[in-house]
Structure formats: C-alpha cells, structure tokens
Length: 435
Image (cartoon, rainbow, N blue to C red):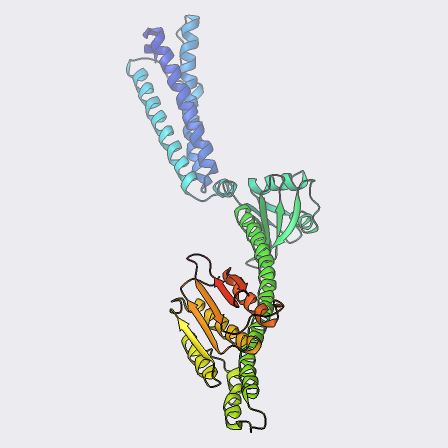
C-alpha cells in the first residue's frame, strides 16, 4: 500500500471519505439487522464491520507514516505484511467500494423488511398511527401497550398519562375529569366530551389469549355521530311539541266540527219544522167556521216529517225548490221562480235554503199568497204580496239563521219593508265558493 504515498492529496481525501461511508453504511446495516425479527443476522454484519474498521486502521497507518516521512511495515503481529507493489492499494480501494455497496444494499433490505414485516417496532408504529385510542393491559390494570392517541386522551381528560389502565377507566366511569370535560353515555358506553366539543366513546372488553385474559380499552372519535344525535334529539323534541300542538288543534277541530254540525242540524230542523208548521197553521186558518177540517190534508202535510228530519243525505237545491213549490201549492200559495240557480252547488244550496226560510216567513207572518224569487249568479231577491209589517220588524230566529248561513260566504243581507217586504241577498262579486 506504499502506492498511497504517491497519490495526490485530493485522492487520499476521497479514500478517507470512502472509508467513512463504509463504516457508516455497515454500522447502519448492523443496527437494522438487530431490530429485525431474526437478530442472528446481525452477527455476520458485525464481522464485516470489523473488517471495514481493520482496513481503516491500515489506511490510517499509511497516512500517519506519510505525515512522519517514514516508510514502516504495516499491520500488527500476524497481520503485519510488507507494503510493496501497486496492486495492494487498488485492491484495498476495490474492497472498500464493494463493502460500501453491500452495506447500502443490506440497509435498504432491512428497512423494507421493517416497513413490510411484523415486529415489535412495526406493531408499535402501526398502533401509534391509528386515529383511535388503544390500550392493552393485565386484568389488574398494568398497561402492556398503549398508543399515542390513548396517551393524548389521558392527558386531555385527566391532566397526565395514567400508569394503570383500570384506574383510568374508573376515572372515566365516575366522571373525575379535568374542568371543561364532561362524561355522559351513548348506546350504553361511556362518552367523554372535550373542551373543544369533540366526543370520544370508550369501550372496555376482555381478550382471552390461550390461558391468559387481558383487558382492552378502545377510544373512538364519535364527534360527528354525537352532533347528529344531538340534532336528531332536538328535532324529536320539536316534533313532539308539534305533535302535542297538533293533537290539541285536532281536538279543537272536533269540537268545532261537532258545534258546526249541531248548528247546521238546528238550522235545518228550524227550516223544515217552520215550513211544515206554517203550512199546517195556514190550513187551519183558511178553514171556514163550522166547516170540518180536512184531516187528510193535515195528515199529508205531517207525513214524512220525522223522516225528513232524520235524513242524512241533503236533497239537491232543485229538489228543495220543487218540494217547496209543491208543499206551498197544496195550501194555495204560489211560489214563482225567475232566473236560474247558480252553477256553484254550495251557492245554489244556500239560495234554496234562504228561499225556503223566506217563503215560510212570508206565509206565516205576512199571510202572503204569492212569493216571487228572482235569482241570478250573485243575487237572490224575495218579495211577497202580503202586507208589510205595521210596526217594522224584529230579527228573530229565522233571519238570524239566514245571517249565520251567509257569514262564511261574506254575503250581505238587506231587508226593505216599504212599499212591500223585500229580502235581498248579495254575494261578493265573482266569488261563489264557500271558504
């Protein structure tokens, strides 16, 4: 290796750098082999590292002799050999390059094995990368393994990293947490709320491995589910309140419906009974003194009264008018109809009921023998040939019933007594539908 004496300074510096890289790469190969699953592979690497160090020592003697200006034998004891010939320097350089390449290759293989293989280090790195907290321990609480997330949660919830898993779980169950953190439950599991609103669910289970039993504690981030559950709970409360309001509204509607049906039945009974009683009274009043009453006519007028009152199906407006003309015609009262009923069924029914009540009042109170009804789509005008009331008139049940029937339609009721009694119904312009 005396050839190195004749190499320029930069070349010797490169050889020194090469030796340093060889030592570094081989040392890395030894360390990575030791952390692998098969640690016995580290022994050959230690031998190669010793060889690299030996080469470095020999080269160091060359540099030291060069600085002293002496040419001395190289080596120690049995390893001493004469330094002569140019091939020795080049052989050493080739060996160093080979060892450098081998050390880099072995290190890369070991790194790949650590990343893809299973080892204590790889398992620890894997569970530390989990977003969930994981803790394994003995039944008495001694912690065998806990990942970084579980330790972070311990610090956030209790202020420090706990050394006993069972004590930590008892603190969670009892709610002994730092200020700002609260404990609740969800689906039978413990849920802890952090200061920032994050929700973590803790689950404790037992693992049976062989003849030994271990405890496992896991922490899962359920913040999104917790927020959704809170919103659902709030919406359920709102729906419950709305449901109670709806029940109350329905109950009120039932009461109003019954009251409306009762009022409608009363009005209908009033109209039917008023009409029949008017006909009966008129028949009795028209009888001559000493003349026997026409009982057959009276029976025909009273016949079917109860059936008509009990009838569920209301007759059509036209049937009501036909029945009205026929009934009053039997006692000599003429009902004259001019115009047509409105096309709207509700409005037509309203006109028919108003006309029946108006004709009944005209015959009962005004002793009329002729009733004229002028109809259009938005107006009903009823007149009779009876004398007007001498002292005006007073609104009774008949006119009051008419007014109630007209209220839902917004119609106006007008009554004139001079020169004759006139009853006029004006519907809102163009509006013919019941609201």
